[in-house]
Structures are given as C-alpha cells and as structure tokens.
Amino acid sequence: MPNPKDELSGGCLCGAVRFAIKAPFRPVIQCHCGQCARWTGHYVAATQVATEQFKLINGSDHLAWYRSSNRAERGFCSKCGSSMFWRRPDDGRISILAGTLERPTGLKTSHHIFVAVKSDYYDVRDTTPCYDRWMEKTDTAKGEAD
Image (cartoon, rainbow, N blue to C red; front, side):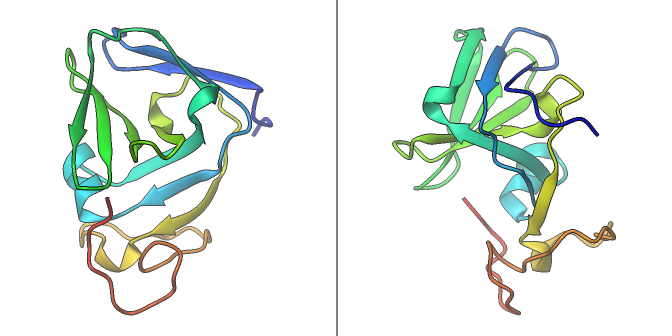
C-alpha cells in the first residue's frame, strides 16, 4: 500500500459535497459502537485531522450536521444521505469517514474500539488491536460512544 499523500480529497456519493484534507492524518480507527452502527448501517472507519487541515471545496449548502449527543455531531450530505464527518464542536479536530476518500489513501488502521458491543452478525478477525471501549481493555462497555 502506498504511503499517505500530503493531501487527500473526497466526497459524498452524489458528489454534491467535496472536501480536501492535508497531512498529518491520524491512522484509521474502526468504531463498533451502537451510535456509529445506526449512523452508517455498520461500523465506522475514520481518520482525523486538525480543523485547519480540512477544507470544504463545495457543497456547503448540502452539508448538514446532526447533534448525536451532548458532546458530538455527525456531518452528512443532505442530498444523498452519505455519512461523512464526526466532530466535537470546538475541539479543533474533525474525523473523516475513510470510505469517503479517493483511493488510494495510503492510510492504515491502527485499532478497533467498542468491540465489546459490536453486533453479532460479524467478527473482527484481523490482527489489529481491539479495545472494549475507547482505548481501555475492559470487560465493561456502555455500548455508545459520542
């Protein structure tokens, strides 16, 4: 797999929302919590950048945000419904769903989170580290992230 580029671009399914992100990129984290599953229909695989490394190229009129908890919101295309972004307001970072990025990305997955509450219809079979919650190996998990 190629090394990550200095800049990656991506967009939604219909192309109404387009964006670019600049390095450095966080490795991809795969989240198996209940909120991510309901938001996307499966688990989420996302990278992250500082907000100033994110640029919306077009589609501000189609980018909508849903406040999914008292701490986080999720961005999606209001035209086609594509799940695209996750952020905590005023945090200074934005997570970008890896599937929205043009390929090849050169990104690698670093770990899985909320594995203790993943759905029963699939298994995590790779050798990537797994955590029951965020980054803690524990037997107790609430089942929801932000």
